[in-house]
Structure formats: structure tokens, C-alpha cells
Length: 146
Image (tube, rainbow, N blue to C red; front, side, top):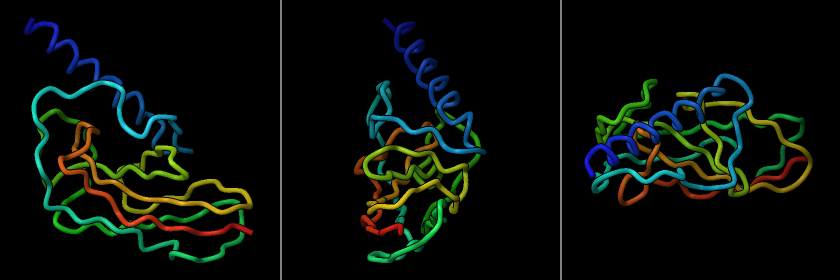
């Protein structure tokens, strides 16, 4: 049974790396707000606090790209995907209208948009791309693109 668990963990790591392989360009969208594999063991809590500082809630913007800026306190964004989980290290996932986007190991990034109203929220996740317990979310931000 232990080899099966090891295989599952390795598959999750490969999926995380492949899923984030395009993080330098237009980020991939997924239809699922959480990873499809299941991490083994209980998830740690994180002292992190995350918020979106741009765009501002209720704002109206123009153009085809939105610049999203996230503020992270009590934790650090790390570049490497790892199964060695630390409560103060991880990645930022951004949800745009419920679709998961990976931020490219940074706290700011541009995302393509078209006219309409959007809801975004950020989540600080562990370095294996799975959520902490409890999950570390920002408050949702609503903005309009004209």
C-alpha cells in the first residue's frame, strides 16, 4: 500500500509542475478550484494573510489586461514546487470568476480581460499547490472592464 501512496504523491507533484509550466506567459485556466489529486496526510495551518491591493473593489478599468497586485503577510512566495511543506512558504493562486489561475511565483501579474464584470480572489497555498487548513483566502474583489 505504501508504494501506491508514494506514486500518488509523485503524480501530484508532476501535475503541479506541469500545471505551472506555463506560469511565465498567459496562465492556464482550470475548471476546478482545487487540485485534482489528494495530498497525503493532514494539512498544516498557515499564519499567512493575503489581500488584493489592485484592482480596487468596485473599480472600473479599461483595456485588455488587468494588473493584479496581491499583498502577503507572514509568509513568502517560493519558486520551487515541493512536498516539504512549511506554513510560511507557498504559492499564490488567483481565482477569476471561479477559474483557477496560477500567479508566476510573484505577487503581481497581468491577466487578459474583456468588457464585463469580474470577481477575483487570491489564495495562498502550500509549496505543493494544495491548500492549507484552514484555507488562506483574500476577500473577493469585484471590478468592471469597459
